[in-house]
Image (cartoon, rainbow, N blue to C red):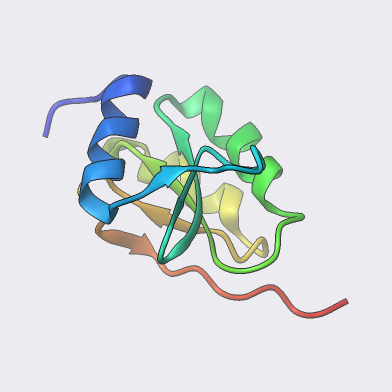
Length: 99
C-alpha cells in the first residue's frame, strides 16, 4: 500500500471503522473501538500517542504500516494500540488501569 498523507489516512480510517471526528476534541476520531489519533509520519507518532495516554477507554494510533517499527516501541507501557489505514490491528490496545 502506498504511503498516505494525513488527510488520506484520516479518510481511510474513517471509512474502515465508521469513525467520526471526536466531539470533545481529545482525539482525532472516535469509533466503536475507542479514540483514535492519526500519525501520517514518524515524527507525528510520539505526540499522537502522548495525547492519548491520559484518556480513558481504548486508545489507538492509526499509522502507515511502514511506520510500525517506529510506533511500536513508543507504545510500550502506554496501552495504546496501533491500527493500519484499513483498520487492521497491528498491536492490540488494552484498557488503562483505574488510578
